[in-house]
Image: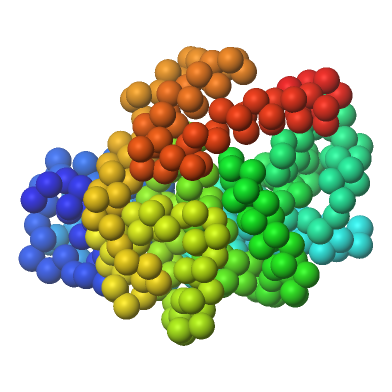
Length: 366
């Protein structure tokens, strides 16, 4: 059995959609699983599979103890991050603004073991004018840089970066971006998410509704595929949302939204990955999976790793300059012109427009 197939089988075991019965791995094979888990930021998830294995099928003791240590660290960081996410939300509430935690600690609550999801930073969507958020950010850090969808705010959280979103995401095509921003405005105007309690905290945060997450997380995956790369962690986030029950009306709404955003082909590729890797049942897929596009997507995911950090095709030394980053992004996006021409072909135009947008909004700094 190939290394990746074993890895997928262990993931399905962790999620309860498959079994590792009879699976016996050598020490070398377990070391390969650990490496893949680190590359895809799924170490805590694989620990759930290890727990289900009989003692004689688990990793060698030194590696097992190391793995337990990784998982305990993930748990500890998540507890700290939950508390700081609540504190950041409270900060904006006291300023009179509604806010919503995107991805991260919100989507973790859909996981079988929320504290074992690999933590990241804090992404928060704040219902406030962009200029006001810019003033807030620059009162703490005069050099705070704004991009189209967020601005970095230092000092809000003690231990984690905070991205304050003026909109959750974007698309390169002006037409589909306008449609996406309209959807975000509708979700903002109809309740602005739901109240969600976070483990080991005394408070709660607002998080996206399931309807919003089904589209927003799909766009997030699409966005990172086009820019720097995407890993299985983000696909697992999406699996944990899509495995939840959808009625006929919700499925119809989802397919209509995907159609308006011209993402049918990408959605079908993602469904194939969710089925093959995580065991999502066909009846839970609102669009039919595509093996052709799904296998191409999965190859990219497994090669590039979490957010493209392990992609051997990227010249990381070029990412230190604006021109180098543009060149690497264009090289990357050229691979997707055939499969996703609408979004890929608009990318250079968006990048050029965004360069001048940043000059205007960052006091002449791109």
